[in-house]
Length: 129
Image 1 (cartoon, rainbow, N blue to C red):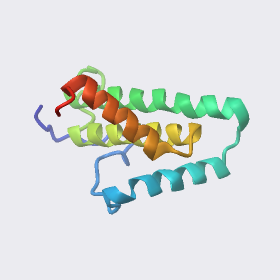
Image 2 (cartoon, rainbow, N blue to C red):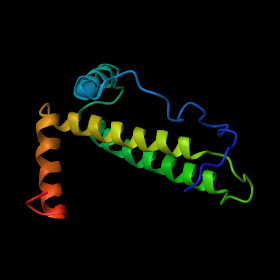
Image 3 (cartoon, one colour):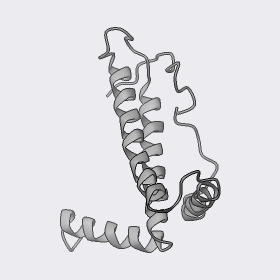
């Protein structure tokens, strides 16, 4: 894929990939902090709030699709409206949202994710990888 210069979307200009000052080692602290912040100000709680948190993933995935369509100019009405950096930012939003959703289900987010990643790696790459 080549990067095409384009004006950012007029509906979502803050999603372009930007350098992050948070070291990877602080990923889980950041996820906990975001979860705490969202949980504290959650307008809908209980089971419904949990389901809405999971549905947020669908919204973020839709934003990836919108950015890809915009980066490739597939909407004839809008033309090229996004960059591949916008796509990168939207993919990061999906990952963050998924990890916060996982944190909503369990406080052992790091352990659950690490265990599952090891399982997928072994299943996909074989036991010697």
